[in-house]
Length: 270
Length: 211
Image 1 (cartoon, chains in turn brown, orange):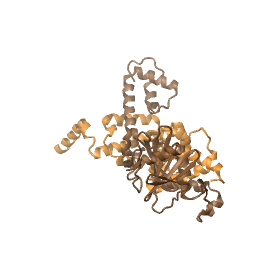
Image 2 (cartoon, chains in turn yellow, red):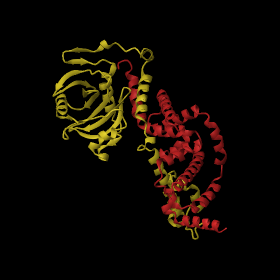
Image 3 (spheres, rainbow over the protein chains, first blue to last red):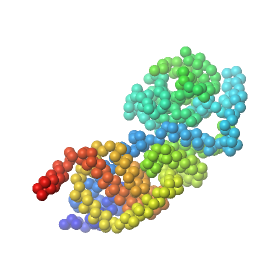
Image 4 (spheres, chains in turn yellow, brown):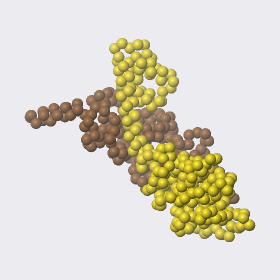
């Protein structure tokens, strides 16, 4: 179609027919080179390809805005996420346990000997420690980071996403710096999850609403300042659990016990 | 905690691999079913099915494509009423590439290129336009333009030849653009860039009023 075509292995008609595949990055190296050779010598096709590229970019941008992860239509609702967690747990469990699941397992499993605490393998205490550790350990991608919105904006980010207002303790900046946050859940209950950078290692804080006291804390009881903590070591993490009215906090950390107590002592509830 | 540590591991692996695609699966499910309740059911069904068949997933291959294949299969099996819609699509889809090229030239060059940018369109309009696409086109456009799957991956997900993916994508994009352009005009958003069209419109009106 161009008046004076240089010898190019791909002609205008061919390029025009396959321009979307070209722009979608579907060409093999050889085809790509042929197309580029043609575009280099054919201003008309170049203009056409540029216009097509702009058109596709615009279309993709609109789709991303409307249904990408930053749009409501592109985000899995927290309730569904939580439901899936429960459903997967149920799938995993052996049949006999699924059958007896409405009957709570014996609660007499917890036993303490001196300062040593053996965790019961059931109930909310388990979730506060075991599930929190697992989830924190997995390091799932954060949905929001302080790099993108500043540390003070994190509590606000949870607004409207949870049925309660999570108020993270304000740790001392040099002891624990917020990295970011995501929605999570403990058992089937939606939770806020905030990840912190520590001078050494990281910590993850789960905040869950528990007005009915379904999460019973397990672990060794320690008085830290005005607060009563339950402390458990699980899978190499030291976990501190405490309650403030109806809200339960579970802090999973790489810290030694003393540093963990120090961190909690220095923090103030916002 | 003690009796099923092995399956706990599998579950951890599954959650680690699959849960990060939950937003993408839900976004696609919502556009397929067009309502939140069905989308939630669809995603849950698909994910549990994926978990049950997780041993068949080939480690190291694309888990996202595998999950989307299960999602679309679940959708197709569950919403068989869409079969009617499919048969309508298959006719004109066979249109030759040559004919497509001609129609593209005719329609694109007549249109104001600025209109493709639809910058100020509302997301609701975009969602409505996507939902209005016939189901086969809708799937391909979502898989390609939102989820960035390759033609080959989409062909595997939908069990159709690559050529079919290409023609559906081509037609789906055109239909979507047409609908978006219409929304842009309807909401008056294309005014700023449409001086040429305004003139044409103006002449048409004058011609009308002169008769």
